[in-house]
Image (cartoon, rainbow, N blue to C red):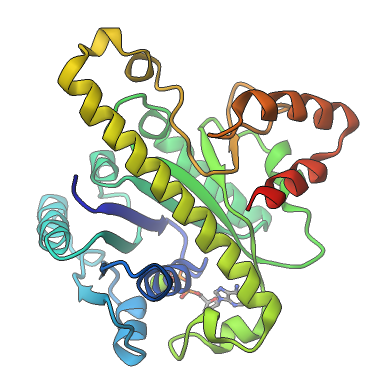
Length: 300
Ligand SMILES: Nc1ncnc2c1ncn2[C@@H]1O[C@H](COP(=O)(O)OP(=O)(O)OP(=O)(O)O)[C@@H](O)[C@H]1O
Ligand SMILES: [Mg+2]
């Protein structure tokens, strides 16, 4: 099994991609002792410079500017080359990329997990919905190579009820939702200078660790499902393997998975799918979305 590859992307600028990429890369190297490669595909290379300026043992930053490349085939070739090189020296590869329309959707198949940061502003949510919907075929796909999608509520104001907003928005795509990262002046002032896990602000630290833990669990689930795929492919023809046929059973985040079919049924977990289904029905009836979140947090 090769390293897990995580793409942090959006088509909109300034949503928090580089903040998330640099901080998660540093987090996985420092707290999980992983060998991490961070490929910055953006012209400004903000996350590359962040790691260069504040080095963390175990993180190798790489620059590969493809966003300004006009020839799509060349852009994709450069990206694949950078990914192949990074794969050879790491357990986890993070890629920071502003998505532009010249990229083919097949590029997404290079990754195991796609993280899309988004605030709850109308403009940003509309852009996020349009973006992920365009690739619904990839994110809803049942193939073993299809990446999982997770949205990261980013720069949230503390009064915003993100669960309510996500549950009431119609996404035609299956996705996991991480805990939110609040809008915080401490986070803003750390930009390119230091990592969120080093801030003296305990709330910011804890919010960030929460996201890190959720993603760590997701990576473990991806590893497990890759192992199962490998074992299954040795002994079971594809048509006899219900998981492959249906795509069910694959977790997105170890928390909520929202599905297009069921706006009112918000939760599905890897470990306790049945239990979560019952709880979701109860919570949906009571309109108590938050109680589900409490349940989720207790397991963390
Ligand atoms: N949680 C947060 N709280 C406060 N400010 C934030 C937060 N996350 C990001 N920012 C700020 O928002 C701005 C944009 O963040 P960032 O560069 O990470 O976004 P981006 O999506 O990578 O942008 P670009 O498209 O330009 O590459 C930066 O000034 C950053 O400090
Ligand atoms: Mg950026």
